[in-house]
Length: 492
Ligand SMILES: C[S@@+](CC[C@H](N)C(=O)[O-])C[C@H]1O[C@@H](n2cnc3c(N)ncnc32)[C@H](O)[C@@H]1O
Picture 1 (tube, helix red, strand yellow):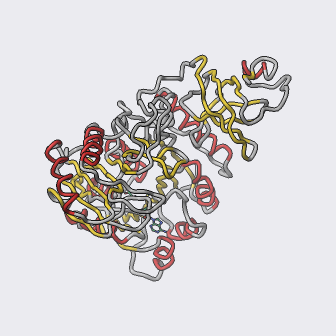
Picture 2 (cartoon, rainbow, N blue to C red):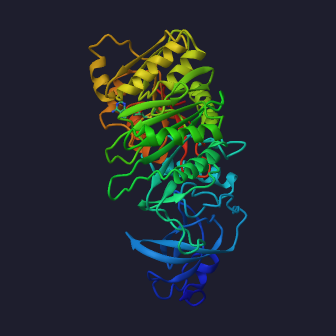
Picture 3 (cartoon, rainbow, N blue to C red):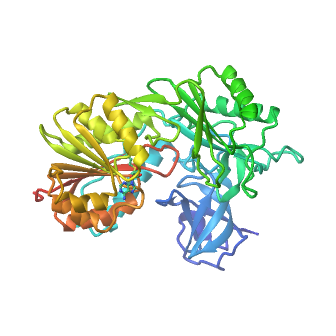
């Protein structure tokens, strides 16, 4: 049933409900006006006053035909069937996998509208938070060319390929190499072209699929937990041109893997190094229990803000090199470091941010803290390679490190840089930070809407939010990074 006039005529125009009519039900087809984008990235509409999250490539202002799917917690999911009338914020998706892949859910939203939406989520979250002083959110720093920006892609092999609607019956269904379809952990969509991956990635991906099938290498069966080929991780140093291929397999099987590697390397001389990671456990992420280097050094290099970093198959590195440089600039401005300052780099990963700041200001001392030992080893190696004698990195849980810092031999920090995981700070950490009495704190957040509680706690403890600068590290997706500056000085 297509519900239009009579069902909710007002909704057709402005989504208001003068005469809402019968309540919509699962399975109904309705025509709606998309009214905005929620902070989790769904384009939103309303059916008889009930919010609808649209699945598919729509933009705010589009008039759309949607089939209502399941309803949970007062919200319908709605499958987009057709864009009836595209708004000025609509742009036709460029990617042939848009709508199925789910990786770039913002593809139908023009890039200026994406940036506007990301800024407005942060503005709204600040306005609704417990903060008493809320500065204006600066316009999001976007990319001039918001495509082919990712320096790392993790593709999955699977024995259950997702068959697309346009495909004929009887096509090969037992071999897929690409990305999981949203909500289907068992199905892999063959990706032929990824427009956010670095430019060489798609050709390497397609060759890997072709040679693997030609050589009868079996892909991972996620239900049976067996199969030779598991992941294909591709990484590139944008400033060095170096490309790493990490093939993750269940067993070493050199008699089967080496001919495959030889074929891939012959077809793609741009690959500077190829590694085989081996692991038989059932983790869903690329992970190495053992490693064989099949070609080259086993690592690549990337340059960020004048520092050179070693990137191994498993090391953490910002995935958008060009925007990470913008991020470092913003953090540098926010930190306002002075000669002789001590900087704490909390949740420092492989030390990327602290090292870049230390490289720009050699008389600052940096102390980085991170819970993952391998990342700290990377940070120390990166510090040595860049001659950064002013940087020290320690393994430790931030809460425990801060608890011990009063009695230990760490100096008091002038500035604290905080780049926590998505979940934000442990509830005890804001008070520990306040006790250090730094001049300034800089909170770098990949989940700005979720960090409002942390900001409010810090304000309560005397650190006022003075500047908010979002940076778009993830175009075509609903993610955004944000640099929050907090000052100890009283507000004017
Ligand atoms: C968002 S990443 C920051 C990465 C780093 N700043 C960079 O730009 O490369 C968060 C980091 O926090 C680390 N981490 C998570 N919980 C932690 C904790 N309780 N104490 C210390 N580090 C933690 C993670 O291992 C991860 O490396």
